[in-house]
Image (cartoon, rainbow, N blue to C red; front, side, top):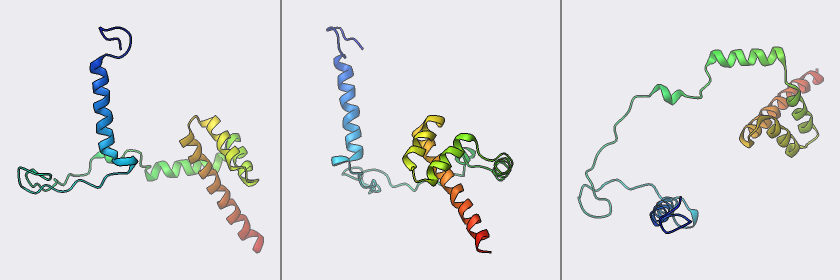
Length: 144
């Protein structure tokens, strides 16, 4: 953003940026520590905890609160498909890497295929869980 004085940010932009930073610092507290929760209002109109005392309104659950939750039907369909189709080739590779103890390499393979670190970590945990299930099922059969 160019100001009237030449190249570089304008004075107003710099002031706004400093205000935002100050608000953020107040929010997270000193040295990155999370601040204590806000105290309830005292009922007085002056002082640190000034303001009218109110009870928070109880809101009915909204449909948007359920966003991301897998329904029973979808869970059943996905588990059935997984049972019939099995694992994808990259998932098989991840399980092989986990078998030999190369967790970090498994994470890298997953990240390369899935695109983000978060998805890769979730996939690695999913594959580790599947591996544990296989070992538990396999261990039970060997004892018989």
